[in-house]
Length: 358
Image (cartoon, rainbow, N blue to C red; front, side):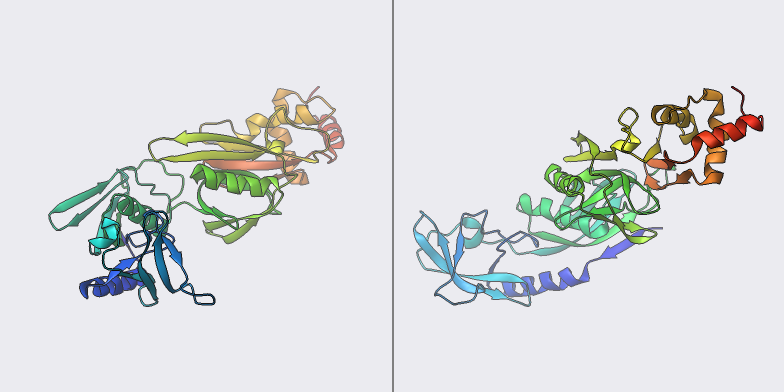
């Protein structure tokens, strides 16, 4: 069954713009091309107030170094765009002098092929390598930005998603969760955190600058938020501020993938100040139990034999020395191990009970 997403709020704004354009009005956007209108910043024009104390919603449009004043502007609140009033004889950019009228578009997204198609008149638009893990509004925003970059005056307001029924494994059953700081929002490929909300692992997909913004937040020991899971908004707290990051380009999408893992979860990076270590089981990786003995030998003074792994996992959970992490996406499962627990006493009791042999 297909799923339909409609951005009716922006559709109404665009319909207002189209109505104004039909009246012969020239419309533009000032700070970003959200609707596909000409972006005056990219045209090299500057908005200036007509007089001190006047509002930013009306003023002069100037081409610095290219003849100066080219016209006037006025903000129209019903369309959330600006109307342009050119001066006769001024050197006006072609995109404003002969603007293309906006059109509304609807798109069909095939999740299996990660492609989207749209028909406007006799013209077929096809988008490949759509980042289907993003939320619906983010997908529409990315596609509309792509159209605006090519000069197409089409605003996509409706999307019909055709689910992938191929049976191929997916990281998430629906769209991917997102991680948010004060500045950016990124799709998440996987996560792990403990019972107190401390961040153990985070996989992110997006633009490199946005990823660096989230990483900087984590390294400064500031919290980030995880959105889009069945538990609602979750605050993730960095632990110790010591994380290892691996950044990999994704050329087919024009994005990057980044893994941020606390050093407490990386073999070989344990230091005595850590009271807790973590084990993570990723897709295609080793299970928690198969990693347990090596991690205990790294951090405990008593030697642990390989054949003790299963019994120590069982008893460690019963004693509360080992606890389960909350995980998702490419991180299948994870555990926390309390290093300062009474492991020596547990080993002695298991030997006396003849459950393990030295």
